[in-house]
Length: 135
Image (cartoon, rainbow, N blue to C red):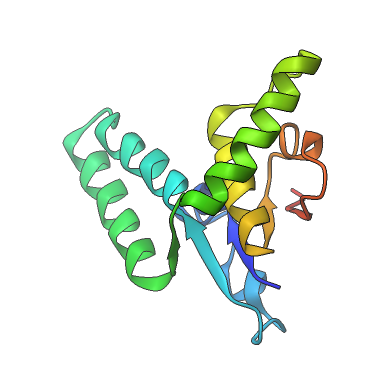
């Protein structure tokens, strides 16, 4: 089984409140990676920076992340999972963030779990294995 770091995990790494070494310690056989949806969220944060210095700092972090981790696309398999859950949630009146559902669908299509500090939306998705980062 693999693990996809969601955006909250990556932000924790950027802010140095999380240690990559501690996150992966003892899990050498498990693949880690990030969803392209998280990549877009990180790049969005680059363009929202409140100063040129902060923009450069964020951009350098994102580029380093892109070098380190495998990137998992939101492909046809993930799209099918996403559409199924989206339809179910609409019928039930359940609200789940679009990006979180896309990341979760990527995880489910790959048989991976999600590593996150924000479980609110993820816990609504049946069958998704969640690894919660605790403060």
